[in-house]
Structures are given as structure tokens and as C-alpha cells.
Length: 514
Image (cartoon, rainbow, N blue to C red):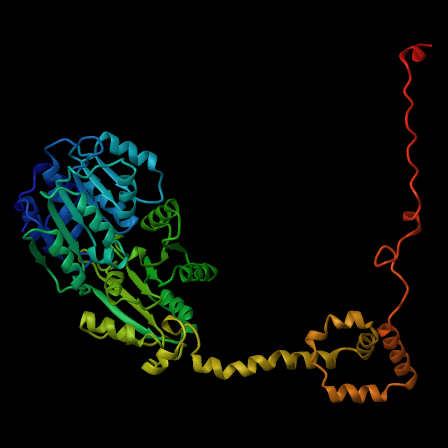
């Protein structure tokens, strides 16, 4: 089937032809006619199959007639991440270039001023992340009661990121009479319940088994020790014909560490994660798409929807915690019928996550060996349960308890060795230092027992003991010497009688003048 047989308008067909496409993908072939008829659609297809064009192309035709009013957009598309929202905006610009539709992109990390100006002029297509949309709605800069078409894209990712309460709040502000399009790569029970609540008699479209990776992606897994992962990754990067690649880590901190490590070894790498400012994220992604950066170390912020033409490889430096994320990660390569390769580096404590992925994709990931590195084995469930940290990044608790006494003995052994190396003159000087100075360090020395103290006193010269005993006796005796200014003693100057002031004699005014 050709695009011209789907019922799209001539302007949209011309834009598709300019892009070089002639035949739609299965999800586009089934979804576009139903969207043009105004039906609600529930679409489920694996990543990289063209779901974005499946709703953008018919939306452009639907919105071609009509005019937007200030602060009242005519359509709304919700995306989970800023990068995916920007990519959908690029699709509208590409396919809608022969129409005069206005568009606004509402994402975090950018100022409100420009976004509010676009809303004030009126927009036909509003693409937003849930957080920024709610912020502008609460400020009174946008009204949602004129939405004709509502799209929830990557719904399962919305669930993972905790956006479902925000989406339910947004849906409560939309008009009841609308067309709703619901697209997701996976369809867990929670997403199914949301679809039943948001859609009215939807047309369900599923072109591939849920959460199934593309057949064009060659998968492999290397099982190595945690400390050998970087070496294994560098070996794969040097032996594989890597044109460009995503390298996924589970944590943002590991993204920065691995990025610096690759740069130290001479690789052309960049970093992308959610804590970066939006301008830096956009700049890094654009540099990667242009080929200025070969390797992009990233978190799962880049695992959904980001389309990089001709991405040759995907490396999972960490096994994803959620099995569905594995499908999305390796789905960045092998897109649009091209071939791709995906490698996963697993550690001994990743057995549970690897088994979950195998159950989801209904196949085992082939194991490969890394030259120069000893292959590891998955730990038992009991050992994995005792292991500290995700993926065995720490030592087991039992091993830590066994090593604890050795760690406690280490300072004592180091102190003894230091004392043996210390010159004898310095030790004797410490023995001669005043008692007041040594008392400050007494808390660091073991307390002297009572028997040892008595034995030491018995060995002291008699003259010193008598002197100390006399000092203590004098200190304990009462002294009758009065303390000046205290008690019953009165200083002599306070006993002197005070002279009374002499009275001033009155003088007549006449005497003063004389």
C-alpha cells in the first residue's frame, strides 16, 4: 500500500514525498485511516515502527481547516521527555510545511516568556510535557476547553516517570467531546486501565507483540566482573565497526564517570542525562545527530522515541532495572528496516534482571566472551540478595562483616609500627612534656588500671611522695585569711565617715550687685 491510498490530503502527500517516503509502516497503514475518521485509537507497536507519523500526518489534515484562538490550542500532544517532545515538533514542521498551522512547544528548562507569547497568538498544535503544561495552566496562560484532538504518546513511559496523576488532572480539564489517540510501545495492565478511562470505544491496533525487539537488531551479552566492565566496553568499541552508538547507564552519576573514562582513553564521547540544563542537552543531542560526537553516554532519558538516523550500535553498560527499558534501549538502533547491533554488559548479580528480560522478549540473549577477560557466572539468589547495591556494585554483607575486625585492627597495628619507627629521642621528649600538655592526649591512650597505678606509686622516690602528700594536705586545710570584698570583712575605706556638704547661704540680690 502507498501513502496516497490512505486518504491524506495533497499537501501532506507532497511533504511525505519530499521526505522520500512512499510506503507506510504497518502501524501507519492501520492507524491513519481510523484517525481521519475521527475515531479514538489505542495503538501498540514496538519502538522504531513510525508511531509518531501515525498520528502527526492525519492530525495535520484534520487541523487544516479552522483557526486557533488566543490561549486556546486546538490540539494537545503530551510527551514524557523534552527530547521526545522536540522530536515530535520537528515532525510537525517537516510534514506540515505546506500548511499554515501554528505550533508551540512547552517544555521545562526554558523561559516562560517566549512560550506565553506563542500561546497569546493562538496555536493549532500544542506539544508539551505534563509538568510545564500544568505550570502554565495554573498561571492562567492557557485554557484547554477547545481541544479537538488529544494525544498521549509513550504512555508506558509516562507511567514509569510518575506522570499519571498529572495526566489525569489534565484530562479532567479537557472537553468531553474530543478525539483521543493513545500510543504506547508496551501495554501493561495499568496502561490498559488508563486507556479504558480516557478513550471511548477505541479502535485497537497492535502490529507486533507487546515489548518485542525488532528482528533487525542483533543482540549479545557479555558476563564479566563489575570491575572489568569498562575494559570490556572499550574492547567492544575497538573491535566492532561502530559508526555511532548510545551507551546506557542506570544512574546519572555513572553517566558522568563513564563519560570521563572514555574521554581519557581517546574516545569521542558526550554525556546526556536528566540533570543537565536544557540548552546543554539540546546542544549535545544535536552534535551527536550531526556526527560531531560518536558515542553518547546517557541515562534512560534517551531510551524513548529519540530517532537518530543510521545509529549502528547500542551498548547497555548496566542491565536495566525494568525489562521494558531493555526493549526501548535497543530499539534506538535497527530502525526503519535498517540493521543494528546491541550489546549488554552483565555482572554476577544481574541474573534476576537478565531472566526478566528473557521472559519479556521470549528468548535468551546469546552470550559472548571478551578476549583477555575471564567470564563470570551469575550469583545464586541468596548471594544476590545479600549483595549490597544494585547489580552487585558493593560487597556482600557477610563478606563485609568478615572484614570488619581486620579493619578495626588496622589502626592499632599502624600505630604500633609508627611507634617502632619513631626515634628514641622523640619518645623520651614526649615522656618529659608537662602533664597539662599530655592530658590532652590521654583520651587516645588506654586507661591505666588501679593495680598498675599503685605499683607505679610504690616505685616512686619517697621524697616525691611526701612532697605530694604535703601539697594535698595544704590544699585541704581551711585558711582563715579573709578574702577582700567577700564575707564579713569590710575594707577600711568603706568605714570612713562621709562629710556632709556645707549648706549654701542665701544671698540678697542687692548684695550680689554690690
